[in-house]
Image (cartoon, rainbow, N blue to C red; front, side):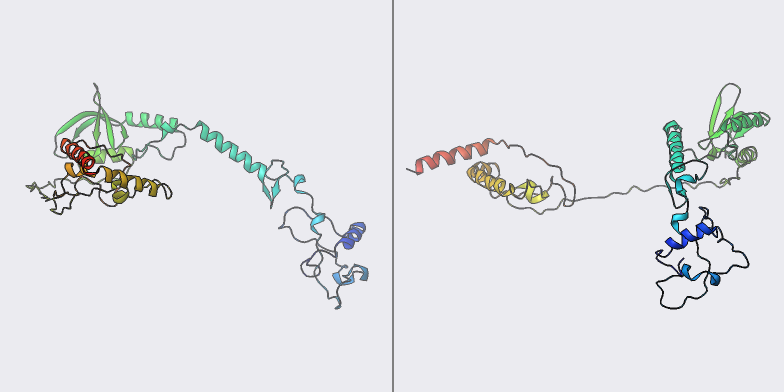
Length: 323
């Protein structure tokens, strides 16, 4: 009772005495059931003083009849819902029935073949028919009664002569007697389109009619590109992958790799200067552009006879110069 006993701590003795006297009966599970009716001679104000709440200091006022507490309701397991007995019923929701529906849905998905998925947007002959076999039989029976005719294109040229069989993937199938011709809908004339719409029960599609497409001379477009003349001198100590593309081996190992690269480049500096002289212009052509996804590459070892000669001269010169 939200008015006289909002916390449910005064119903223990009341329920026992009321059950003994037979004044109230347990309510059904349905929460929308009306409250129990009392006899005309009984009223809430005629209750004995022992049944009134003792914890209230103020005098009690006449109130609505008390409803039985939650303990008087039968347990959910004794009330099957939806025809499926279940022990897991929450807020009048039968979880066993929901699980049974899920099993049926999973069984239906297991039987479904992905090859049956079609991207054909052509309307079916009888889209309101639930059974596809019945719709196919109706299509065969009714189209056999359709007359045979000559099929012409938008220019009036004869394409085929025969009876309409099917409409699929925006193409009609025509039985010419010797073969099955498939003709796109956009090639048919107005009268042929009206015939297909009448027998296939689809809206009429307006064609271009006699409106021709004007021919024109298409001018070729040329785009001339000139390479930039911006250049720089050779970069002997450049780390291409790190400095141009941001590829690094890690925050701890990259300083070691860069230091090793510097000392090796310093030792091979005569070889690099012989291969690319200091006064040579180097261009940025051949590199990946900024922002592009550049793959991880291992640069090849360049081979140069002039670089080898310069490296040999520098090594022997250093041997003779240093005593």
